Image 1 (spheres, helix red, strand yellow):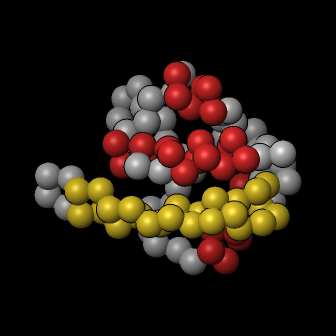
Image 2: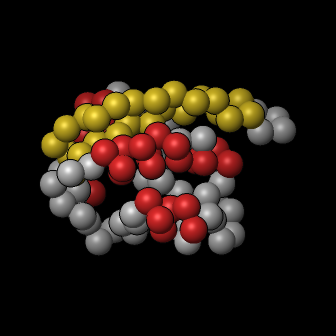
Image 3: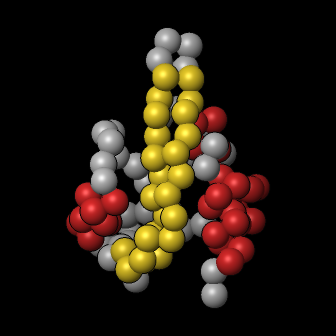
Length: 98
């Protein structure tokens, strides 16, 4: 997206939870539970971006992704504003993880 910034895994189109699960299967993470979903709107200078974030518990950590804990997400990885909208939700779920 932008130089030096990281993104959460994402698709370039709207999808259902079932489609997100199927994508996770294709990517090798094998989602086992939908924990929650959140919707956010990010307004660029010329477009309104409506985003839905699905939070899954996954069976595997695929090599196709960087897996970060709460500390790394807050201090090591810079996220674009659109993805930072979901960061509080991600951190809350990470803090609840067994």
